[in-house]
Length: 273
Ligand SMILES: Nc1ncnc2c1ncn2[C@@H]1O[C@H](COP(=O)(O)OP(=O)(O)OP(=O)(O)O)[C@@H](O)[C@H]1O
Ligand SMILES: [Mg+2]
Image (cartoon, rainbow, N blue to C red; front, side, top):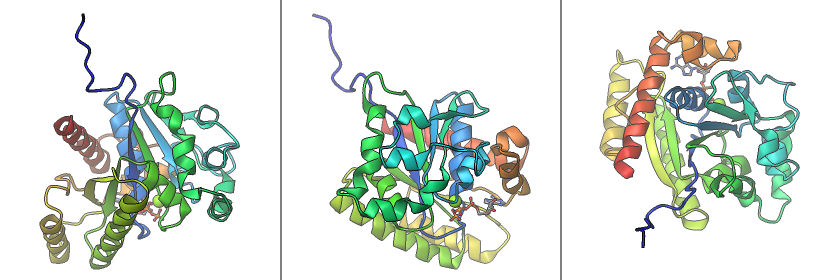
């Protein structure tokens, strides 16, 4: 009889990574878009899913406001299937589920449902089924709040990648997120792990930023990425062109830093396998 490996199911499904931090403006969307694009550039099939009513991730890959008829909202509420809401991007290996305008009302509508925290898990079930869409990574761009949208993302995710600035108040944000992750683990998703902590908009010239990095490395040994994303104007310009940085200016320090991050994320995946 042929040896059959029982180690992996036939269709193990993607690794679902939530990019989350309850603090606003720490680099979540920039990281979600550019990590997704960098993984796709390395020929991994990636789905970027926009969970934020601000829809910045959607417009960063070419789906601006008013251009999206069906997206995350319709998917979450069960008005559309995953296949209905997946859109292509300029990168062949990168697809997106953009945020439609109605997502702004989803927080309120979800609360009225029976098991509101589990809607995204149900909507993405086909990713783990034979015959469903095949992605290696699903990247969820979360809003800067701990509402029902973020909870839905943390419930379906395998891991959380936490972008943060090397600033004093960013440490408080990190503490708050740790508490949230512990709660979600206890109540809804015991397998949720921390993918990694990423310093964004990093300015190595200030003492404070060096100090914050040192402190976070001490508390979260092994979780902080070696790659740090520098302040780079190309990263802030590329969204208005509807492109990830590597399609806007691949030589820029920002684009290169996210390519390096993708290599580090893939290397960590190798060590887990
Ligand atoms: N490395 C960087 N260099 C320069 N500008 C950056 C960098 N990273 C992010 N930005 C800019 O900083 C602002 C905040 O970044 P971003 O939108 O990624 O944060 P966010 O955490 O998603 O914000 P929100 O909490 O509102 O969703 C944006 O204008 C973005 O273009
Ligand atoms: Mg954002």
